[in-house]
Amino acid sequence: MRREITVAAQPRESRGKNEARRTRRSGLIPAVVYGAYKDPVPVAVSPKAILQIVHSASGYNTIFNLDIEGRENTPVMVVDYQNDPVRGTLLHADLKRIDLTKRIHVSIPLGTTGEAKGVKTQGGLLEVITRAAEIECLPDEIPESFTVDVTELLIGQSKRFSDLALTGSMKLIGAPETVIAHIVTMRAEEVKPAAEAAPTAEAAATPAAAEPEVIKKGKKEEAAEEAKPKKK
Image (cartoon, rainbow, N blue to C red):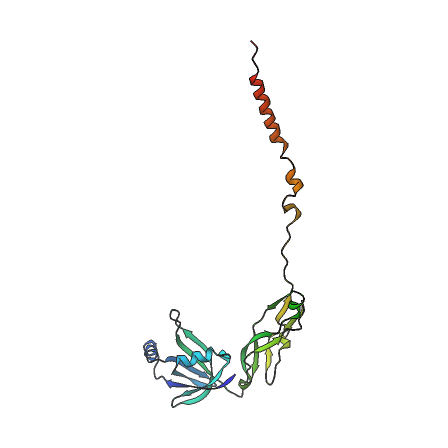
């Protein structure tokens, strides 16, 4: 999605770790601009401006103007960036020039709206399977996102890529039958087999195995025999 945003950039005359450190100490970060059949240009830009664009609703799909002092003013997109693994601060960014007359390949976030009938009246569960769709379109026609209405879905039904509302120059990349979301049956708790069930009252009342009783009886008889007076 194209935004009326202009980010100022300063050309860098040299490269290397020392020059990158000096750039960061000045409050900027090193970046490279390339693409559109032009030579790459090393620049320095505001990390705050780049992060605001990356974290906006359109994110990486945001097209904005980069004004390189004394060089060019061109539409670009952020295609990659590097963060400090410890501090989390932005260290470097890759910016790509965009030809507004040619289609580009972008990934568009997917969302759902509505309460599905399969959930509301049948006790089913809405499962979101795919969260982004790949499309090609002209830069000025990049959508911020796609939203599919799941209100009429019943258990066993789904929404697919073929249900996306493509307009203008948009062309779907990928299989039209790819499932975005569907309604599934809630899994019931498994019932234990009868053999594993708790013993019934009748079973609980059954006396213990007979063998221990025989043993006890044998011990009593032995004691009685010992108590009898022995014959001389």
